[in-house]
Structures are given as C-alpha cells and as structure tokens.
Length: 349
Image: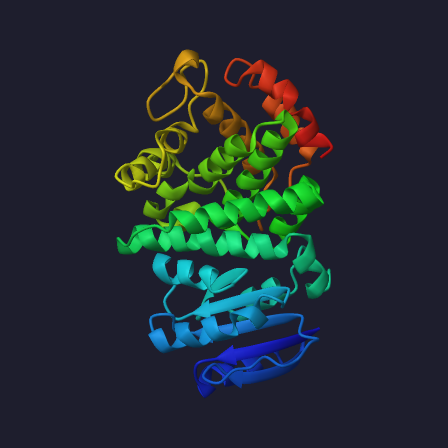
C-alpha cells in the first residue's frame, strides 16, 4: 500500500514518516507547491492547519487530484467544528486531530471498509457525485457556523447530480460508494438523499417533485451544525441530556433557513418535521397524521432507513432486510401504504 504524505511544514512530515515507515511505502511533499504526481497512491495523509488561509488555498488547488485517491485522511491542528467542516469540504474522507496516536492513524489506514475499486472506476460509479454532495453539505454547515449565506443553487446542483447517479447506477451502488468514502453526519445526509431520491423514482414522481425530495433531504439535518461534534460523533448511545440536545436540530434548522428566500415553505416544513410521527409521538411539534405532508412522510421513512444502515466504526452495518423489518414494525407511526411501497427500495434496488 502506497501512502502519500502532505504537510504544511517539515516537522509534521517527519513525524508522520516516523509513525508510518515500518508499515507502508511512503512518498511526501510540502503542501506549498504540492503536485501529487503518483498514479498508484492508495491513501493520502494531509497534516495542515486549516486556520491558515494559504493552506486552504493550496488544498483547493490540488483538490482535483486529491479526490482521485481512495482514502484521504486529514490531520488538523485544532479539531474544531469549523476546521472539521473545512476538511470535509476540501475532500477529506476521515478527519483526525493532529495529536491522534499512531494506533489511531494506522487503524484508519487499515480500515477494511476502505475502497478497493480503482479511483478512475469509482469516479464513474457515483463517487464524484458523492464527493460533490459531501462538499456541498460541509459548505452548508460552515455557512451556518460562520453566519454567511447558504448557497442554495449549489445544493440544487449537488442534489441533481446525486439523482442522476442513482438513476444511472442504482441505489445499491450509491449506498456502497457513500459508506466507503464518507463518515458521520455527511455520510448520513448523503445516504438520506440517495434513499429519498430512489424512493421518489420508485413512486414515479414528477421531475419537479423529485427536486423537492432531494432538496428536502439535502437540507434536512442542517440544524445539526449547531450540535457539538463530540455528541454527533459519539460512539454508542447518547445519554438523556445529549439526546435532548440532538432533538433540537429540526427547530435549529428551521431557524437557520426560515428567512432564506431560496427555501420554499415545503422544504422548510420538511426540515422542521422529519421526526414527526402519524400517532403524534414525534418531535418537535408533536404533529399527527393530518398535519404531516406527503413529502415529509417520504423523507421520514428514508431518514430512518438511512440511519439504520449507515456505517459506524464501532458497530457492524445493519443488513437492509433487518432495517426494513424495523420500518415495518413502525406501522401506526409511518404510513402503511408508503411502508409497503418502500419494500423494493429497501431490499432490491
């Protein structure tokens, strides 16, 4: 396995060589002037301070080459939410603190769920759409954190690319691609968008309705930008206080988007109400059946299914059959006809 190291100073490159020399064939270069020439690179480790605007500029310049490398681990000097968002927007598939241990870095490099498909093939089967989608979602989160305008058109373009990829390559391919190359909240948002799109396609919705579905899915968890990263990425169950905080994200997302003229009322409704259930037991408003729109009902099923099947480093991926059984058990909370219609999406598409 060939690992390429990119660092913003010589000391960082030296430290990385010391950690990895015994295990991997290594090449390295400084970020300032980096060119990433090799075509046989299996992984890249980038060690850079993303608070430095020159480093961000340099990474943007090499981004087209970075995204062709299957595994892209960023070690950032200060693992704040903003720096993490920036790292994913710049092409990272995994983000670690710069003081991560040798064991942690080796574990990420040796992850058995890492891609084995050659990069030029992977880009043709959905990876480009997934990378663009992840960058778009990361940019949205960054905008929320920095108080800058959200690029609605970028979300529309990215959602459209995801829809095109799924129409061409199928949902199963999309799920595998996203789970190989992305993690955490961004993985979840990409999975939800893909499942929602495929559900819409299976239902035969119009092009305009398909756009509404993928826009709702792209934005549905934007309120999680307000939740501490340590809680979102916590391995294992949340405690009651953490769960209460996470459950504020639909309302937080609604607050972020409600004054944006590019967000339609139905998308805003989906952002706020995608955790509502027909029996009134959901949140944040305890809506019941007649108050929950069709778009929201579709998004809710897709969101639950995506959460069940997503990849987490601390647990095995749930089989799609088991996830669908759980969806079926939620009759009364979810619309029965839609549960039945979702079967092919869940199991065969």
